Length: 194
Image (cartoon, rainbow, N blue to C red; front, side):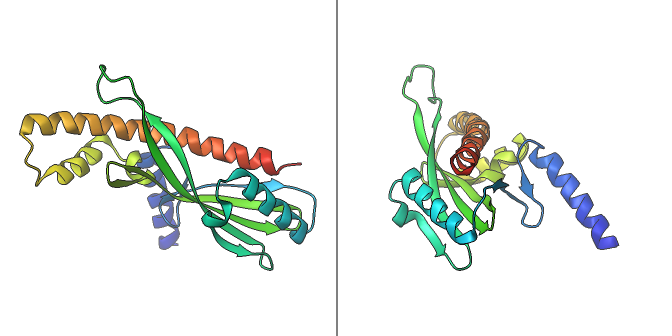
């Protein structure tokens, strides 16, 4: 009973901290988009359809597939999409393309596909930024950014500007990343439904 109450308390706290608009898997405390697509067919038929959809939808599909187990009805791949960040200064007009990496896992059963989008992170200027980090408070994010800049030779004034720019990037990562993942969910549900 105490464990259940603690789990409920922890999940409630995480929902508050991470925001209710981004789905969190309470077991792993990670962002995870998931759903089920109903589709008439046997597991084998649906697996073949899914595999064809993956090949058609993803460039170099054979290179991104991680798991390909027809017997177990499991297919997983490592995907990537791009988001465009606003330029750092008003004088710049060129958007900055940033890759969003994710794992896409399918569990195929008779008459349905279950999908999960997990392990989401952004890659920018040599940094790997997990989606979960973009959901922290501004104060927590600022602490992370300042820790990265701690040993740098930049002046304090430049560091303040860099922190401000990075906080804006975190905001964009969260907003544009969420939109991109909702788009991927839409692509899955529309591409695989009857």
